[in-house]
Image 1 (cartoon, rainbow, N blue to C red):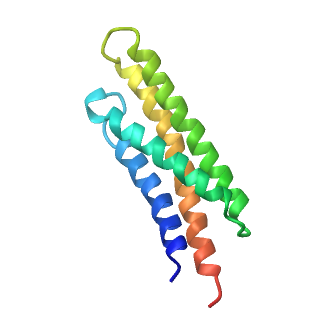
Image 2 (tube, rainbow, N blue to C red):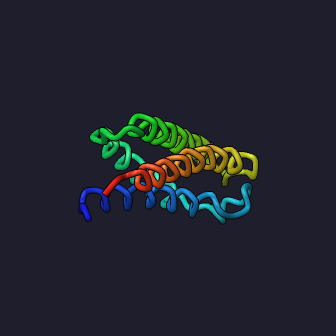
Length: 126
């Protein structure tokens, strides 16, 4: 068992689970979505992206692409939440739905990344 592969898989799955944790809840209810969880999902996603730069596997470029998509979506969600927050009022249901929709797009990219990781792991020969 390679410690590097375990850490690599751990970070990829952690990025997905943090993303899911943020998205779960009523899409338009700000009380169901925590800004710190979005921040952590973004940070771990960026770490996963950096780790994927060193992956030279056959699926490595596709996994990197999915990670970049997740980063862009999470950055968009965070930027929108920040923008909406500067308007001085509590986020409306529509604004929160927009933020969560961006994060849900990142979640889809993270699911694809985990599926690719599973495919790659299953195809490794001993």
